[in-house]
Length: 260
Image 1 (cartoon, rainbow, N blue to C red):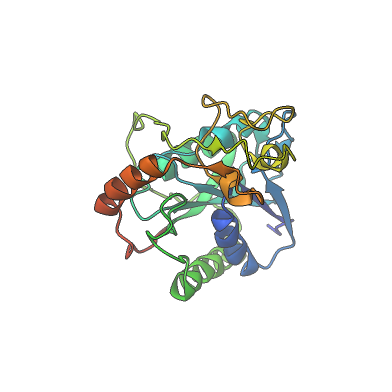
Image 2 (tube, rainbow, N blue to C red):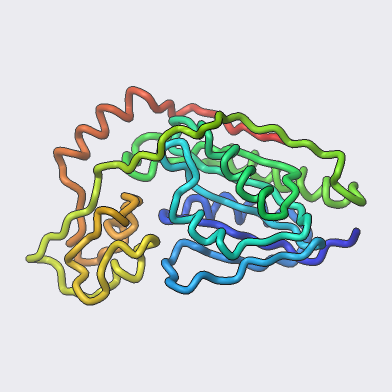
């Protein structure tokens, strides 16, 4: 079967998952079309793919799970026994049930998983953990993953015989939200609204960007990184507590896990 296009469907608040998925895609010999679900959209885009498309799904791991914000877009997701591969990036702790959850969700919507990979990256909150990852060696591994997927696409007339198994447990671990919600320094905030536009979960009001809805916030810190006035910040006390906890349970020398 001749493949049509490579579709990239990803969620990447800090840009790291995008970097990983783009490196893999660069080694797949198909014209690509991107669906960046990082920017919050009230109206969900149609994510319907044909049998001759190849879809790469990419997500960061939050609390060992697929981000709820990403799964909200799956209401419109539909495949026609469409081949796909999965990419999960995680901040050097563990990806736990994320790959299994993502695999189950896409298979339930008409996709055939022909490959998967979990790649350790710089931690999104405590950036000294896994600092500057993916590094040069990581990028070689990610590129090789893309090469292997490209080879598989060329070799198979159909993918029925492929049975990808990924680690994880059901029921999935409880999805817990980190308490590291951003605050606003009102003396610095100019109410430009840039943070509201950046927020992937719609947690910041466009009319009053000083406010953050904690029920919607996923603590990705994209608003903190993107605020030119440095008005958005996370409590120093909470950051110190997070640093102490995470440096004990995260290992910066984690290696990628690939399933083909």
